[in-house]
Length: 64
Image (cartoon, rainbow, N blue to C red; front, side):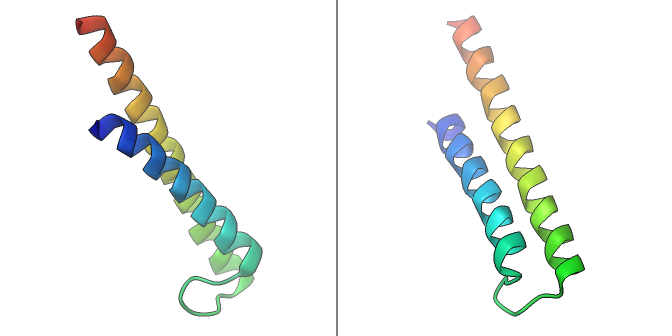
């Protein structure tokens, strides 16, 4: 269950990153360069979480 929740969380991090880049906002108004950096980091972390959860899901299926 944790792996699937991590997968969903990864998608939300990617969506949050896109939102930050498009709206230039994250609890306060951001400058464009800061928004791009923060949004990119959020999306990168989302991809990392998705990749890690897919790896664990495949690993658990191989063990069973």
